Length: 171
Image (cartoon, rainbow, N blue to C red):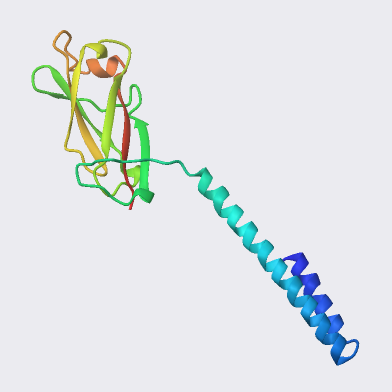
């Protein structure tokens, strides 16, 4: 309990044990005014705290999505990397590699909008890539390079990894 409110209640108890009925009525009226002021101060502080909490939130606006719009209060930006030398590249086609990126820790409930970039120590700037099989929890990135073959472990040797940002809904 608030210290001021405790003192106020203690004063009420003391005042009720003294004086005539008329003076007790005056004391009650004075205490009612004090309690009303205290309630106003509590309401003001509660409003200030709510404004402070709301000011800490970052606004994320999603204007369109593959599965339609959701509750804007649940929009979230989530980002990650598959990490250099830890990305599990698989060969595909005759000159490409692919990997599945796990986004399950983001908590999306609809498939988010995903942006990717290929990071590493060489040849990644001469690639083309595409996202496949996107879900709320993961997506698959396929990468091709016509000048240098990333297959056979070459992508891993160059430290290729996927840097990604996803924007979506969590409720």
